[in-house]
Image (tube, rainbow, N blue to C red; front, side, top):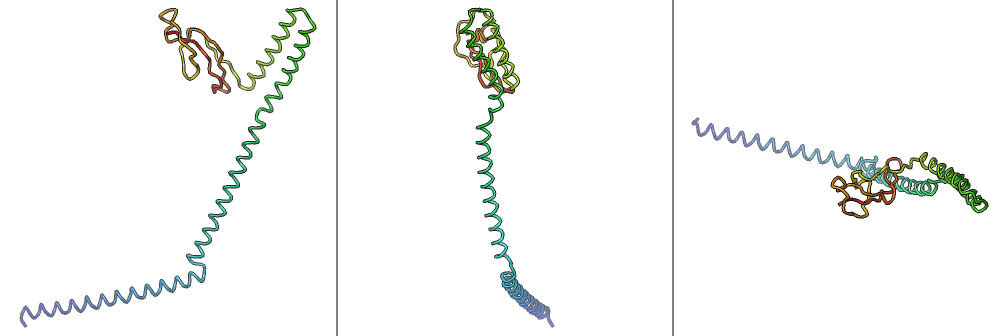
Length: 193
């Protein structure tokens, strides 16, 4: 046999092998498809993917309903809390109000100015003590301090009395207050220009 004949035979054998392997692959694919269809049919009957999907949808709906209930409950609690948040402060201020009423009655009845001033001073100190217990503190600001926009509110600017006072606080119009280190009222100040 010649070399050409040998090559043709080898090519024929390769074609036969390729055809046989292709036929085997096709057969395997058909078997896999049949197996998947059988599993899908069995899965649908035994609670497969569709039943699992339905179960997941049910869980999702329940979770969303639970979250909505939680959101409503916390909103209601927040509203209730804001309504009664100042209850303890107000109950501590009631004795101060009582003292103020007694002081007003005694002012009408007495003509002694020194006694009235002492009484008002006592009531003022009591009020100051109650507010400080709750965390209210006045800002300590004096003329000559540097202006801080986080603590002060510049009402106006005036010509500085001296060169050192430029950009600094010249006068305090209204005291500022902090409640537990948070500014609740900015100090109103005049700045030197």
